[in-house]
Length: 210
Image (cartoon, rainbow, N blue to C red; front, side, top):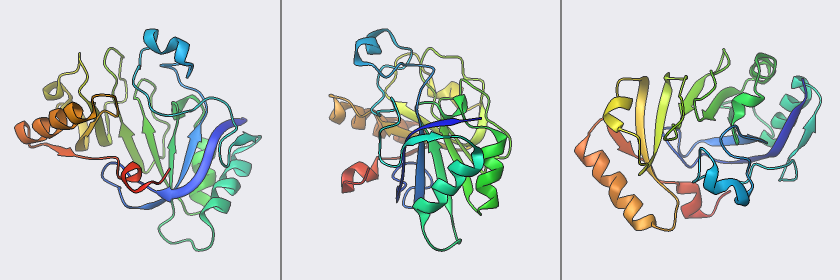
């Protein structure tokens, strides 16, 4: 299988439970909920995405012909040392491309493999960390994992219903939108009203990291 990668770079994880961890971000091109074109945003199933996942022209992006080739590329971004290696695979929607061969190739290079997915496609086996971020109006099939990250507010999602899903951590994150202050207030209120939810901010944006 070949892989289309928008970007691949070393940074600090800025969101969720693993926030603050050194990580290689591997962003696949493509998504099943939005084309990535602004002209299509109004009719997309996910309308608030803040990420460019179109094409392969980002930092460290490109086409990779095999799992071994892509895993070696990820390793080159990490640099020296094999302790605490972490790769966060995201998109777009990573489950359109992520397969067992790539997971195995990354494990062979001593990476813990984390994924951030919209949950509409089942997660591949063997992942070390699954973060699902549900989008209102979509059919989420991946209802178990390590972390459920709810971007808030979203009309059409009831947080109390999500609490019945099988996750170890429930995270609420303010939507990055024009009404940022109101979104932050809404996220804080959710965390205060329902203690199972923890507030998470996009720390990488606050400190100026990609």
